[in-house]
Length: 295
Image (cartoon, rainbow, N blue to C red; front, top):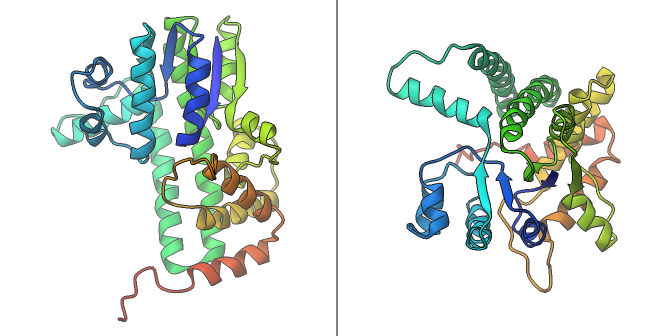
């Protein structure tokens, strides 16, 4: 079994496809949906399929579907496995239909985690709207702790379902570091490839994670993180998120890895910033009102 850490960037898909060709079964990090197999078979267009997806990366999803179609045409079995997100969809359907929320043990576990994440996210948004950097950092630390708990549950749930499939290629985001370890505990021989890191090494690029993601991983691993270290990493992460490109970028001959290069460069720069430097930069970037309501 191979756990392939990757990112939602079009530039990574050619590498994903090349590796996936060596596997008969591929598991992608998406919740099950009723249109997926029809898209793979060509019964519906990729554009129609993506339009009906709840995705933050429509360009990536479009190109990924093209890759998955090619793999499917080669006889590969492709499964969507993301039970945590499927549970959230169950909650949403219950709310929309005014039915009771699922209340089994697993559902309650997800509800508790989502409540913590949601409360911390609201605090974060409110602090951002006030441009209160110290409160923003404090809420970011709370959110990161809750998010780490969420990723642990997600990895546990996903590993449980993947174990039923058996030997396969497993697509996973870089932050899901516990997934291969849980699969090993279930008796699988698991190899791991960190695709963005591997590509960066081949290009001679120093690889750096978003400091916020690194902090999340520390919490997931149960590492001892001081309050000052957590606050500094969240302060750096706020600047990182403020500076990275918001639009999806396509690779070109002149710039084959537009996201990887920019993200590593910015992550490297923000890691050198002190807390006070982050605070000053935040107010320089976001000091103006979010909406120019005075005009």
